Length: 393
Ligand SMILES: Cc1ncc(COP(=O)(O)O)c(C=O)c1O
Image (cartoon, rainbow, N blue to C red; front, side, top):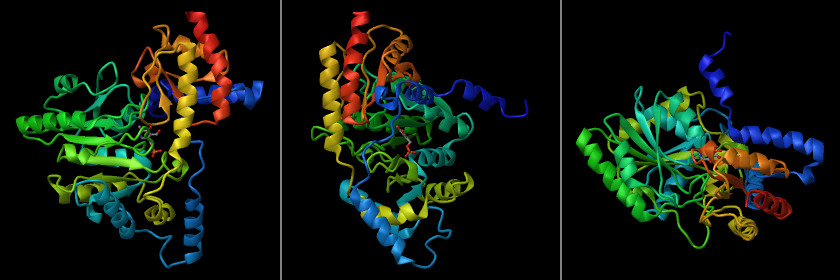
């Protein structure tokens, strides 16, 4: 075959989330969409805030010259300034427009960043369970993912991270709040991690970066806050997007923010811009960049997700499922009642309930429920969840 063998093999290990999505399409055709309870995909079901449409209408009417043309690869200066001001208000640090690069979602941000920092075979430590696309993003850019365990409650296991650090470690990549567990790492955990990375950067004479991927940072409950990675460590970089908190996943808009105090800042800034260009993104979508300054303090109504979480959690508890109620994201990650999470996910499928096995995230013995769906879907699925549990109890 004259195509990439590596990609063919990647295709064969095709993502579970996709598999479930395809299974869902088949079942919806067969049983009718109202009879299939699809919790497989983290595709937000809430509409973006009304302000988005108003903002876009205003911008479209403006017709300013050059707004559809090329721009600096890092993005419009006005947008980067607005993001910098927003982050300055949010953190104890003073950001400038030079600290921000607008990107094609968080996925684009991660690829740009990894391309900018990785040498061949550099290692990136990732606590598991984790968003499996990280494997591809790290590999795309010549690196090697090195996964480490978390604690039973999915908080960071600092000794495990320490054991994994070696001379080839270039970065630790965390996702806060976490997909698939919903865990929000605390300030104390981040501070410990920052202290650890300072010590080992000094030991090896090379910076180890702390990358925090935070597309869910506004989808957070019970007055919980997602602590700032910038407070924890000087060599820190935030990647994020508006895909989840503004329900704009299809519009592909996000950004990278580097710690204003980061070492070798001028070089990093230049590299990020260049990597945005040569990866073929060139720049983030122009219209979305013009809209974002008006929406930085907005989000979908997070209380609606909280309500969905509560309906689901109450129903599952009653049915005997075991899980910690997470403080963030729109995912629940219960224990499978049998060790084989794939078998359990297949059993749920028999009830037309589509979830994803924890193994697909490096978290076997669990399964992920993406509850960014209609309340009716959650309520409709609860009897099937209960019947499936009964089979195994
Ligand atoms: C943890 C995590 N990081 C990154 C992404 C990619 O986000 P985006 O759509 O902004 O590229 C996702 C999407 O589901 C995610 O869950």
